[in-house]
Length: 289
Image (cartoon, rainbow, N blue to C red):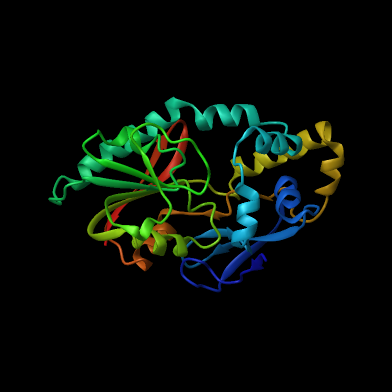
């Protein structure tokens, strides 16, 4: 069962700024079989981490992501969000998107390990979908594995594992995962079980803010489109927080809060930067333990 948290998930701080928000109609129905309801968007004044107070349990996460972006999942989401699905899917899943991401990681990885004296012969993409990013970072001389809960069809040259702690890897990457999960530090602990003392880690999360003018404008436009195109759904959102939606992304990192997350996990040689890939900004982080 989902729980509410009043402590920062990164630094355990209790000095939190609050504002009203709602669970978006698609998630409210798919996960909770309910109408949209009010939640809190919290900002930690100590580490600047922003997050929604509602934390889904494993069963609820499975409900949300089962069949992620399959035809049926997309059709259901489109019935609540008619404005973006086709365009979003085309951008998210086209090959150019993955190629650009892979090229950026490969370029920065080469620079990062230049003075470390490490060799990468095995690699793991934690939450790596079908492996199409990691397959483009390394050639056939590097073993490539993916840990993924979905049933995506793997690209050639990549193998799937069901237990990431069954062995260790020289390189572990985790991209576009930590913004979705209820407890980021728990995922980091799971990743660490697949590492040895010289493993190189790479993390990537969106660099976005739920209370920025651009995001606020987007949500206002979406509410207007609901009013015009899905009036019945629009009426369900008429409550406090209707212009701030809790969607798939429930965690919002700054460079400061992401560094705190890395330091909490015992990482060293932390290199954090803001990168732009496919017109979107990301926090990019290399580290070791």
